[in-house]
Length: 160
Image (cartoon, rainbow, N blue to C red; front, side, top):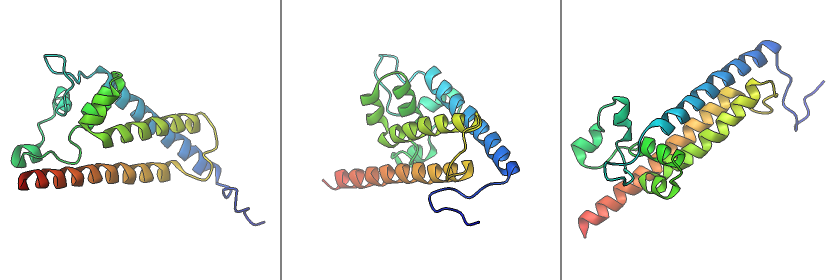
């Protein structure tokens, strides 16, 4: 029997169980990330949205790249952006880091998919491993694109 091109190949029951366990683990990670972002305070003492640095509330150090160069790293503003979105401030979230907004939307969609797969829905064409790998590549690509844009605009501003 050959596999129909529109249908995924049949998978071994052990593979399906493994995929469901992985999906459950990643769903928990996603929910935890959203819970942490919701608890963080992305506003300064005057109530203005921060542009970066919200991660410091987790006990993490300041960005070494920003300290050394004055320009933030590719991830600068991601935590702040995520937290601002969860506080209902999408405009400020976009200002803090537009790639963080895109990653947050992707993370929300993935977390929902993981929950559904963990609950027993067949994952379809994609395994949990594949979804995580693609999302990691897309998120990294978005962060890199934003950072390169920052480098270019910072360099152009320095020239003017």
